Image (tube, rainbow, N blue to C red; front, side, top):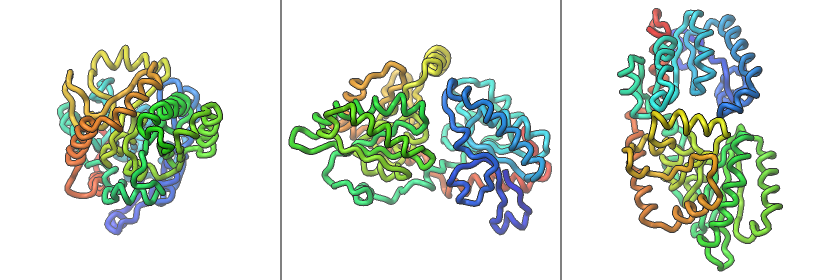
Length: 390
């Protein structure tokens, strides 16, 4: 949430407070609620954090009453922000939704909430604006902030030098996620698959497959290292075939340096696509999330889950650009075969690379996406009568 005068906005001075993590705090956000306390994904994971989530909503409402902001900006996390917007809307300032929910997949009843509670909906996927506008939602495509954040001018060779990776090494990227539930479902599965795939990729000449494991700054890195060491202790062949390199905060360079990757479904897959990293998308859900996905969502939406495939475009019955493994029962053997294919099938690699070039073109906008989003938000501040839903 932001408080500013017309003079402040012209000078670029904005007083912002709300929910945030280390990066937003470093940019000057006054943190009312630490975002790391709220991180949850899936249906079962949210239940355990519900008391803290409800308390955070109350704290943010009280802060808004005290501070009287000019505008509120909510980002992603619809289950949280829809309820927060309901609390904030009577306070009289406009609310913008940046990175709205994917209601074109399921739960289209949320469109009514978007129309009623938000004065602007700022989309970051190019096909979304037309969909929302057809539904009466005041939507704008502002480009994707990843275009501002990613090292697009960095070459593969430069990324490898920065990560101390030899130019001729075979490099696999693994991104299992950072939440405890994601690690429990993905980390061992990915490492088992990598170990099984390595002999086919590097041969038997003594070379090892380099495995890059970049984690976000918000992750509990000592816990990540402990889990990796536990796996090594159980896998007696790991040292023979794998050179495992966990790190923190350098995922984009790892994507540039890698020959191929397995990436948990989410924003990281789109980052990899924009950076040209050949990869497959995976997600092993809880039994409840899996049930909802296959028995409810798949009844109405037959398309892909991965953002790369959604932005690139798809047609029912046609192969998607990057492979997807979204199933509770996926095995390490399935992923082993996929890793080998991503490394050694040159026709497949060329097809994916060409598609990723097209994806980057689709994501382009004339100016910085962050600047476009800021213009839309400041426009709300300059409209004295702007109200959510108007």
